[in-house]
Length: 181
Length: 299
Image 1: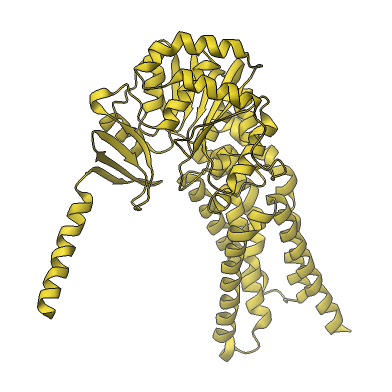
Image 2 (image 1 turned 45 degrees about the vertical axis):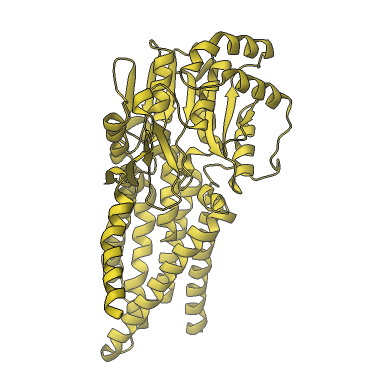
């Protein structure tokens, strides 16, 4: 959600902040997350491990980093070739946010698989996971829109997000190595 | 007794809204705001929300269409002291269309492009505020930033750019950044002028001022005691004091019909030329990366 909010800010200089810009961003995030859920769910059926889980976080971090360095160039190109800001913002959202968001979407179903120990408690585990995930989303939204944008530049927040994903990835991979010793 | 109180309560409920709405002649919920047209005395006024302390965006007197009502609109006309014969004018933010119409009346052959994101505002401007499109005046219903970037890509130039897209309640943050101002500077003609209507009453003042000062030099902070608005005037070439005085004399009679005291404004501008910045010059500059204009405006 934090990334989605920043998405509006990133696109505004090239495509404005009209309702269709937010429509583009929300569409691409929803589509990407739905794709991520499918792929993450499928991946979790192939001998899931914390190391693989950590790799998903790491890939998401790697794919988020180009937003800091390459988004201006990508938007400049799209702005030049797509004159209608509706389709320009849709294309820019796709190019900038789709792939990292697909990876971020893979995390939830994979987490469900790692946390479930018995079928009987699967609903409870999934419920807790949705609770934590949605609570995290709302806190991320609030923190970003109320405070982070007041204190930091967009790129600083993006770098912080990337670093957080790398730390989480290291924790996941580290915990796997630790438990297999 | 209780029944009597209840009766009074229901009577108030019935009459209250009728009394409040009696002066509203048009009300519309658009994609961006609530657009309200009200009759206030002899004036027709445009408002963008329904809050009680809502400021009027634009007012005009149908019986004296040429006379400008608001101080900020009159102050914006002081642009002619620094850009006396604009051939191409860009107005970002249409409102009731009073500024584009005033400049059209003053310079009938000038090409005027007005940018308004909200089609409901354009519609209302045409229906209630005597605003018309013709061969000279054209409205573009799009985001101001997108228009400026496109103008830049197509190497368009304007002699006068008027930024009037900020109301007291909401500021389009991408229209108040250093990069946006640099884009505007790039589409100004060699002797062009940018005039921006902004506010003076919040924490945003310092940030906005340092942002403008980081792009424009010279930058004139034109204020008047009768209003909380200020007009930032940013000419592309050095200011000639003698020309300000002579232009005020030249335009005095023509400005009278717009209700613009141009001689007084010339005096204020000459004084502003000698003035020091009255803002915190260390305030953080607003950029595309850092632009919490609305959060700062609420402080």
